[in-house]
Length: 261
Image (tube, rainbow, N blue to C red):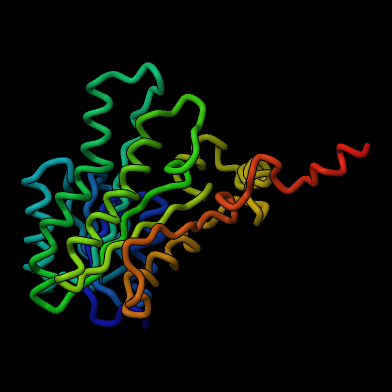
């Protein structure tokens, strides 16, 4: 197993996507503390994990909560090897976003990652190193109509990841980010009214795989980056996006023949 004996913290683990990540880490041998504001979802997430799972209701936008996440993990397992930051706010009104929305969303999406990284760093260093995986998005690289704060936060996460990797390298801590494309998640389930087939058909034109991703597919990338198998990988942003970022505006439809038509 990739993560046998490792101890991980996963923020935002109560979501549909987060639960897939947590289950994958546990399947690969890790023990996982799940931190989330969703108490019901968090308890559901760890219900079947036995001694390998622990839930803590926590708003990681608070320094006190960040300290509790670290202390609870150490109290249960005595070490921290992996940090996966999935917690995210979608509070974004595009061009009409208020200062309060900007500050609140960036606090959760970006600042909390920096604070959590700083909080786990000495404990990872004390045991010879570790791995941090930050969740970014395809939104970090392209403009999307009506969205400002979310994509800006995701772009900043990619740069934060590079900075963390640079400064944490001396402690043998690797830091990477993962940028999924459209991935089946709670928000897509809600918007499509549970219609996965419809979701795949909408996603098809701008994903080379012709569909939205499954959360488990992205979770496998995260698990690899968290493991010692990725020992040479740090400061990188991994596209787990079904080819979204490789595709240009011409998409997969041949455009040159249209000139000859």
